[in-house]
Length: 97
Image (cartoon, rainbow, N blue to C red; front, side, top):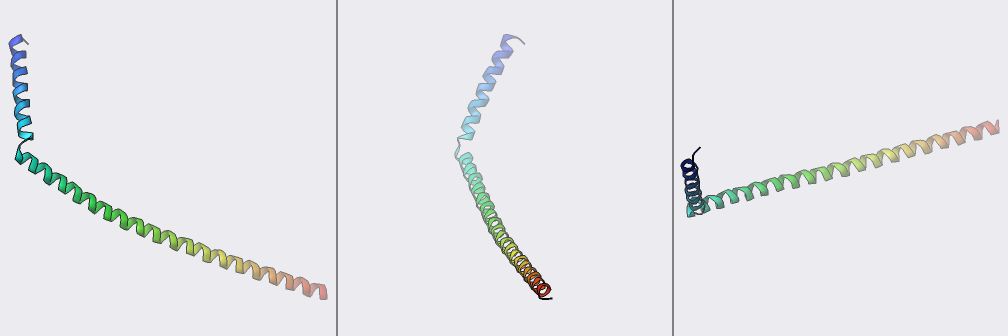
């Protein structure tokens, strides 16, 4: 590539960059940026609402699971107490005989 080609590419790139900057800084472009940013904020709000709903649902499920485990533990303890009571009664009857 000769020097004139390199110079032409440099000048063309500089012009293209200058025009691009003008276009990016134009009022129409700024208006588009505002609309894109607003859409992004709406999407964020929607996502946060969904996340909050999922978190609340997960908290409810966790609370129900803990309650279920407590109920099962209480039933198991009652069953063990009843078995111990029956064993004591059987030992008492065996001792009497």
